[in-house]
Image (cartoon, one colour):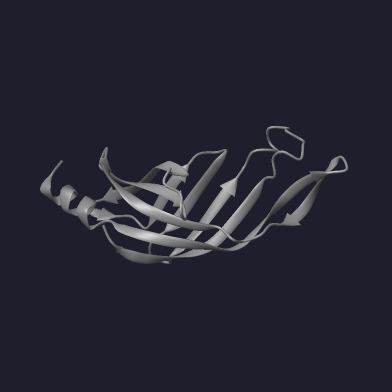
Length: 135
């Protein structure tokens, strides 16, 4: 790790994020019904070092000690972190825009997998973040 990348990792910011809106679909009566969900999610996004030339982060639900998502990366291009932190995968994931301080979370289990049941509800949650402090 170069001194430059080490300095970037040490200066990485911590974010507090709060949901504004959440919507998706519930399985009910043999069909998918559009549904609004409570937008009460509170997340803490914390730096977690450097790996493969990318800043790493973990996402915690507020108050939890175990990460909700721990595979988050922020690409670095020509010594500057890009504006997006990407977490998770196709089943569930979060994109965080560090310039606009917004996030978008997707829960994708249910519909595409043909898990037509009340157990899974595909959804999207949007919200805003604020910088708490550098690490």
